[in-house]
Image 1 (spheres, rainbow, N blue to C red):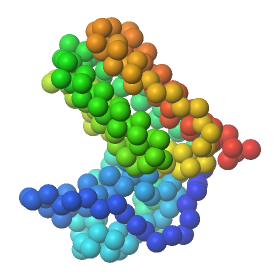
Image 2: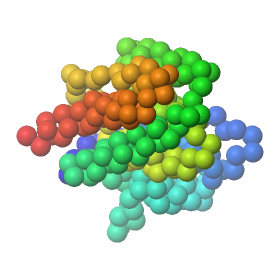
Image 3: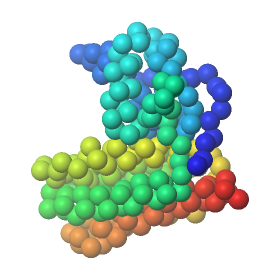
Image 4: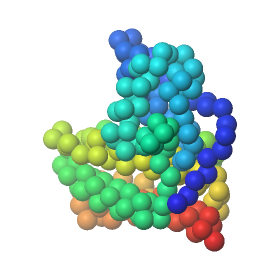
Amino acid sequence: MVSLAKAVNLKLPRLTRCEGFTAQEYAYRCLRHALMIGAIAPGQPITIRAIADAMELSPTPVREALRRLSSEHALAVLENRRIIVPEMTVARFEELVLLRSTLESYAAKRAIPYVNKILIDELERIDALMDEAVTNDDHAASVLLNQRFHAGIYLANPEQVIMPMIESLWLQLGPFLRVAAQYTKDAYLVDRHKETIDALRRRDALAVSLAIDADIRDGISHLGHEMLAKILQ
C-alpha cells in the first residue's frame, strides 16, 4: 500500500461558480476537479470543516458532496469518520488501469461512426495544447486536456452510457498519478494521440482500439508502475 500524504494545509483549486449552481453542486464540482488533477494526495486525511473553510461554504453542502464522491469510490470514509483519498496498492492500480483500457477502447470503437472532420480538428487542437502543457510542466492542464481529448471521442456517440464509469476511474487514479508524476520525472511517456486521430480518420476500429490501449499503457500504466517499483524497493 502506497501512502504519500503529508500534514499540510488543505488548498483546493477554485472553480468559477456558475449561475444556478447550488452550494452542494459547487462543492461537488470543486472537489471532483481537485481529485481529477491530484490536488489531494492519497492517504491525506481531510475533514468536512477543512473543506468548508477552504471553499468558504457551510459544512452541509460539503458533506453531501463527500457522500457523492464516496459513492463513486473516489474517497473513503474510515471507522473514525476520517475521510481520505484511498491509498494505492499494486493490485488496485492494475485493476484500475485494466478497466480503463477495456472501457475506453470499447467506447472509442463505438464512437467511430459519429466522428467527423470538425471533431478531428478539435482533437488536434486539444492535443497541441496538451503538448504545450507537458512542455511547461503544467500537470493540472495536461490532465484536464487529456481527459477532454478522450471524452471528446467517447461522447461523439449519442447513445453512449459509459462516461460515468470512465470518469469514476479517472477520479480514482488522479491523486495517485499526480504524485507519481512528481516522483518519476524520467518516466517514458509516448504520445499516442496522433495515432488515435489518424486511426479515426481512416475509420479503422482495430487501430483506434490499439491506439487508445497503447496511450493508457504507455502513459499512466508505465508511470504508475515506475513509482510503485521505487516505493516498494
